[in-house]
Image: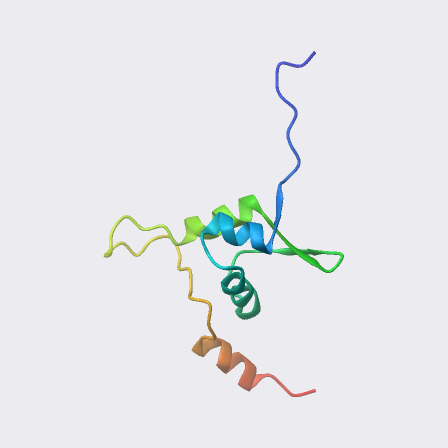
Length: 94
């Protein structure tokens, strides 16, 4: 018998569970998904699911030690951003 425990499969959370995990509302998480500012997600049969590791990585990206700390990355608010508007304006229409 192996002394090492078997690895557990990745844990997936649906939007309401993921929102509670992050301390956000489900609607805020949906907006982040729409604007591309939120954590990575997958679609399984039309259902949106989040891996716990992706949620934690998204939170870590915004971690700062002080107000003057630039941090590792930026977690943007759940709204359309100027760069997003410019990308849409410059895309050819179908």
